[in-house]
Each structure stands twice: as structure tokens, then as C-alpha cells.
Image 1 (spheres, rainbow, N blue to C red):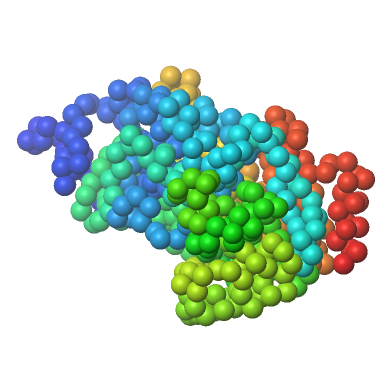
Image 2 (image 1 turned 90 degrees about the horizontal axis):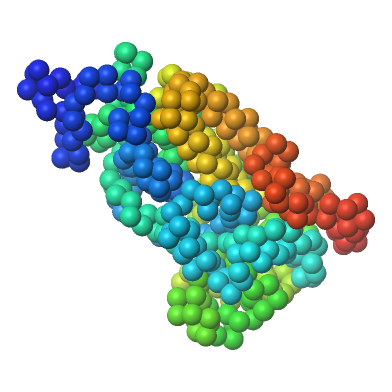
Length: 461
């Protein structure tokens, strides 16, 4: 749908948006003046990435509007947890001080300081023995819903906005967007932070086929679990208080993490856990919640402790969600002279098997903010700044998506586990990616003798 600007000579006093979202005063050469007064960012997608981006722009005094197709914050009932590690320093610079200060309060395990660091345990599924401890210098695991709610504080999100049109001013400056086939908005640039199945990516790539995700061939299930029993809750996290990944000789993984403690650490009967189980194959998405739970409990019978009890004790009324794991390997898109680009999962949708997704999203925001600031300061043109951002994010994104794909296949094949990037690289960014020099401790068992120990341990079974 074409969108045109309203000239005041025709009776308009500015930019009128149906639904009275906001009005911008008309100015000649509105989009040619790259300063804080006239530069306006349109963010499409209010997930964690879009909200961090909004917070960063707000902190920098840069005008923005943010739109979300979902009806409200945390509209989805499904919950999962995510790791923040090598991008933590970047996140601190992006978020307002008062928001970042609250980060520890939403940690899955608030008893462990963010700066403490540690080792993420990978255990043998059948014996419970430790296969490897993947180190991280500092970091935390957070529930998706709490992280999103924290990043939404003070941000005016326009909900229920489905992007239906994007057009570019013929002068080479400015972008016009349409939501729900009728609500119009104009800005200097549109940033797509609308997730793996990004609508903005369709406009950037030029067609749906080029923007389409590919399916990762895996049965992956997520569960939000409350055992409602203090003894059971304490037991399942006794050995590994925050989280662990159990790898089975039968080529599947079982994951457990504490997600939240609604009534505090002294009330384990209300503790909430995030559990997941996955194995390679083409999933049957027609199974009911109960049928999926039966399938998972049956597989868990061969596991050792603590995984066997953690999955065997799942209450019968638990909703077992199917996770449609998909990916999009980053490739160049048309940024229309720097007026449209992608950030986060929209730029590099990846399987969640190396704990990298959110960290790269935060890295994207950091790089993008720097480019926008350089445009506003007059240090570079919008075209050149966004071109440089795109080139870096496409290269980095493509490498990480491929690495996560390889890791996902290897972790679910017992014969290839020892070759998996999570064992050889851990959570560390790949060579050339942000943070690699500042997180020396994030190389898992870099010493040859330790790697050999892990390999021998796996081969012993």
C-alpha cells in the first residue's frame, strides 16, 4: 500500500496517523536533517531485542516509536529461560542505570551474584556424571517473561499492530509504514526486531521465499513445571541449583533450570522450573499436551538422577509445548539506502543449542546504536552507516547460525557429542565476535588434557 506525506498547503498540519497515535509537525526536508530533533526510528517488534533497542534509544535521547503485533506484553503462555553471558557488559551500556540495576532481581537463581561466574554443567544422562563444565566469567539465566517485562518499563509500546506495508520516499530519505492496512507512520528508518518469522525481513528481502525460515528436524518440547511439593522441588535442584543439560546415550537431551521463586527461596512448593527435552526427527505436531507428556516421561525412565525424577515427577496437568525450531542463515538484504534493516532473531534466527541467541541480539543493538549515533552526529551518512552495520551482522549472524545448527545436530548424536562446538568453544563468541578478548574464562577446557579427559569420559560409555 502506497503512503504519501501530507503537505500543509493541502490543509494538513503534519503527519497524521489514523487512530491518533501521534502527530509530527511538518518540516521541509524532514528526512534530510540527521539530528536528534528530526531523526525518528520505527521499531517493529517488542520482544526483548526491540525493547532493549527502545531503552537504548531513549537513554540516548533519540526519538522512536515501537510497535508489536501481539495484543499485550507476554501474551504467550509458554515460558522458557535464556542465558546472558558475553553480552552482559554491552547490555549494561545500553540499558538505563535504574533498569540494569534490577537485572539481578529477575535472575532464575538470585542467590548467585551476576559477577560470580561459574560452570554450566553438562552431565551424562544415564549416570548423572559430569561430562563437562562450560565456564562463563559472569552472567545469569533469566525467564523470558520477566526479562521482557523489565525491558518494557517506561516504554510506550503500541500493541496489536500488524505490519502490512512499507514504502520509501522517492527522494531517497524516509520510510513510510502501514499497520493493520490502515494505520500509517513515517520515520527515518524502520528496524525489524520482530523475531524469527520477521515480516520486516520479507520487505527487506523483497519476497516471502527469500525471507522464509527453514525447519530444524527435531522434536523439541518446553514445559513450565511446578512440583507443588517442597521435597521434590529441593531434590531436583540439589546437585545443580541453577540448571544443567543431560545428554543421553540414546541421542536426546534433557534440560532443567529453575525459572522463578514466586514466594521466595523458603517456599519450594511454589518454585517454577523450565524443563525441555529434544531428539532429532520430524515431529508430530498433532499430539496433544497429554500425549507429549506421556512420550517424555517414557524417555525419562532410562535417565539417571536428577533428570529421571525431574521429568518423572512432572504433574499430569502440565502443558507440554511443542517448540517449532527453525532458523534463517543471515544473508544480505536490501536496506534501501539505509532506511530498513534487521536486528536480533529477525537478522539471524538460530536453534537454541549453544546459548548464543540473546547475546547476539544484544550485540546487534549495541552496534546499531553506535551507527545511529554516528548518523545523528554527522560523522557518516545513513546509507554508509547502515551498510556497515548490515555487513557485520550478516557475517556474524551467518557464522553463528551455522555453528548452532552444527551443535544442535551433534548434541543429539551420541557418537558426535565430543565434536560439538559447545564442548570445544563453549559459550565464547566465535573468533572476531564481540567479547572474545574480554572473556578468556569462557573457553571450555581449552587445555588439551582437559578436552582429552572429556572425550575419554564420553568414549568410556
